Image (cartoon, rainbow, N blue to C red; front, side):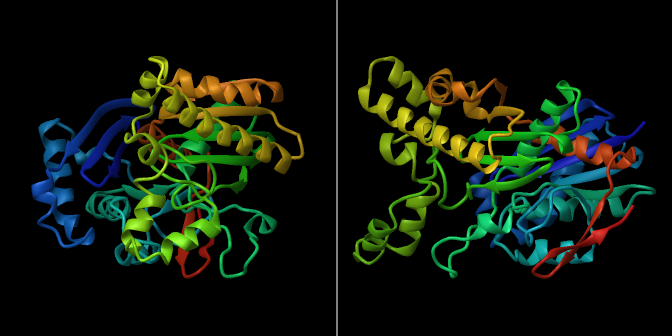
Length: 367
């Protein structure tokens, strides 16, 4: 029986889970106080603290780490790579440490996974489907200026997981079907899945596509330039307008879609308009993905936390129901998705990939 430890570091917490095959036997969110985190100078300096917190919790929960077959960490901001499961190697650890694409708590996932697995017999360390997964067609990268190409940063882990789940329920291979997946969370990403590859998707992190509870999405470039050079705002303040304090937060003063939906249900016309506008943009993005796939679509999926929100989903469906059957997988289970990716490798169902660093990231495959 395969036993898998999953590690998912966030800014103020570390989620861990232990799976025996498909069954979850432990799921914990280890929260870290603001006072504790303020004592670290950067993400990398949190490494030893986070690792020890994890080991302490495993001991308290009577989990024998010597029985682990694999440890899988949330993939961090490495160079763009193809979707899949990657064995943690020296190149990957180097890029996670230095933060080649930026510093984020998730960079610690692969590092801690490798450290724990390295001290155990026959235990392997992986990451899977980080946010920098890049399978874009070349034509999808081009914008109106060569200094500003489109980038692929999105909810790859959940998009791939629900794509495979849909395929399983349809008794088909994910690699044989075309899907449109809209992840509706703190950020929103809409991906066109062409036979197992996400060939077009908006950059959900920092400024492309529908606005979301926290992010401004695509905004008028001319007006953004005027704001940048107005002298009224710092660079950090403008970046926060785009990511963190944009979207619902900017319009309504909350980043909680369920709160905005409650206001809308109570008759707040401004909340109704803003939620409608967000859903309208999601609908347009789904329509655009339909064009990317040339109308050959086997399913449209709504997923993420806001897929629970009947107000938001209702608005979206006004625009997309005519395109065909809509499947809803509300929420996202990153822990299960990570565990299942590792399990597929351990069972020999997929081939583990090797990260090579450098601008291309991927150097090939290995068994």
